[in-house]
Image (cartoon, rainbow, N blue to C red; front, side, top):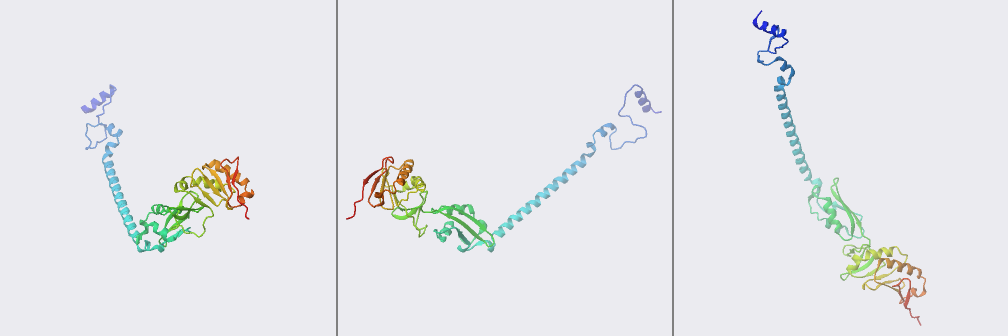
Length: 297
């Protein structure tokens, strides 16, 4: 029996356990230092697998770098292909025949095409439909518009909704029309043979600010008018188809509504059926016939 064996047995008899004692029949790895306890290797498996984990991380990093490189190449190829396709002759706008205008009746098609400002030749992918829509809507007779691209065959499709004239109106010495919102419809752009029966005599400020409210009251009334004279803001006058004139005083939307209701109740009054009669409706509760027509001899 060796000295080391005697020491181990004497330690066991004292209840002590030596970690550096070599069990009999077990040979230790010569690469592991004898001073390192065996139970520490069994409790820490990462100590032996550290090199393998480092190699695995390097492989993952190389894989991610390779995937990123190929993604970048694919993206570059797609961008280059898109530029190549955009410049193909099949998708170029060469002339005005490739701009189709729909929904226009009073606005000539060339005016809408010129409002787009598209020069030819131009790739269809390099035009912005939103910008073109705003340019078409800048035309006063256009109420709304939309522009879409069509690829097969390559062309632009413009949908237009026109404003409708409701009264003849003279602006800056030029006879034209306005719509229900007081928008001036230039006859050079808005060309129609059907003129409104109603005429508005007023300045541009009244047409822009007060006309929408006034026309809204006229729309809700069964009374048919031939003319609205608002040249004097303090003395609004309306003319019936017979030629009779009705004085309404200063324009007030709510009072005008009552005045039209009273005028509707008096529409069978004989004097209002003749030209030259003047009815005072400044106070709708007290209508007054100012001038009666002279009987013909």
